[in-house]
Every structure is written in C-alpha cells, then in structure tokens.
Length: 215
Image (cartoon, rainbow, N blue to C red; front, side, top):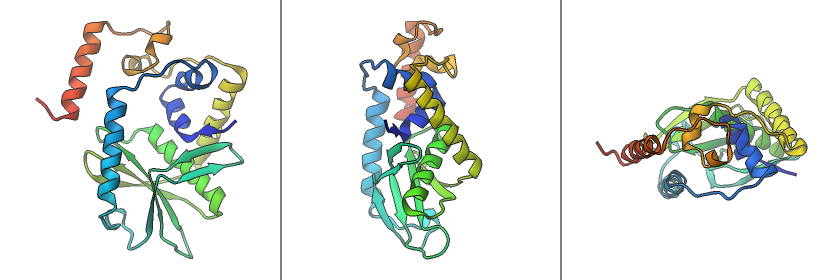
C-alpha cells in the first residue's frame, strides 16, 4: 500500500486523521477552509505562470505544476504544488515548492511534507535536494527552507508509524485536544474535550473574518 505524502502532514497534525483515512474510513465533509484553499491554489498557479523566478533566487528554470513524485523504498506518493527544474549540471537541480494559505507561520507539519517531497525527488533523480521553498499565499512571499538530514530521517520514522497504524489497526492518541474544534473528524472521537456550539460558531466567525480581512 502506498502512503500519500499529505498523510505525513496529517499525522504530525494529529495521528488519528490517518486512522480515519485508512483503518476506519468515515464520510468526509468538505469544509469552507478546504474549498477556499483550493481556490487560492488555482489563482496562485495562474499568476505564477506570468512571474519570473526572482522570488526563489533562481535565474532560470522550468516550472512544473502538480507533478507526481514517489519513493519505492518508502512507499510514498504525492504531488508537489510547484517543481522547478534548473537543469543545473552541478549542485542542486530540482527545487520543490509547497504553497500554503496560512496565517504566516510555517508549521512543522509543512516542513516535513517538504522534506518528504525532497526524499522522493532524490530517489527518482539520484540528485541531492537540500533546499526548497514554502510560499505563503496571503503574504505573496516565498521562504527558502533548508531541508536537513534530520528532517528526512524523521519523515522515515513517521512513515513507519503510519504503516503501524494501518497494518495493526492501531488507534493513536490525539496530538493536541486544542485542535479538535476545527477537525473534520471531531464527531468520531468520543474522548476529546470539544467546545460547546456557541464557542465553535464564534471561532468560525473569527476565521471567516480573518480570511476576508473583515473587522
């Protein structure tokens, strides 16, 4: 069974997402945040095609949008938002770019998702990938990310833990119960301390205001 690279990001956010995706599949609701993120990615790709590579500190290269990558050794598969091929004969040739519609913070699960893409590219091309970029959509800014050997090793460990959940049908502990209010799987976790309906509505209102810059 192949593991999607987004499962690594989800596992680091909360291991139970993996459980509900593979071991005990449940109906998934497309949230407002998910729809909004998709529209933002589409709009970004249209603009990206007209831009130079200056924001990535690269002089030239070819951009590929949504290319598939994989690792046979780790049973990983995924699609990169943007892959730049500089065609360099020495040094790093391929640069993965992950685009996120976040509040500006670069969270650890995104960093490890980028590291997983790097591992796949290295295995597929037999070239080193020690640097990538995370593009924060609201800020329209690309942040260079050094991809370390330690991060790649952690990705390998996470992949093993995901396989354990799937193969042994193991029900893991939640990463943090503070995240449960905004989780699409919250109604299936009976041991989580969820806020009341009024709190959830208020948090949703604040989120919508933030997305549309309302006061």
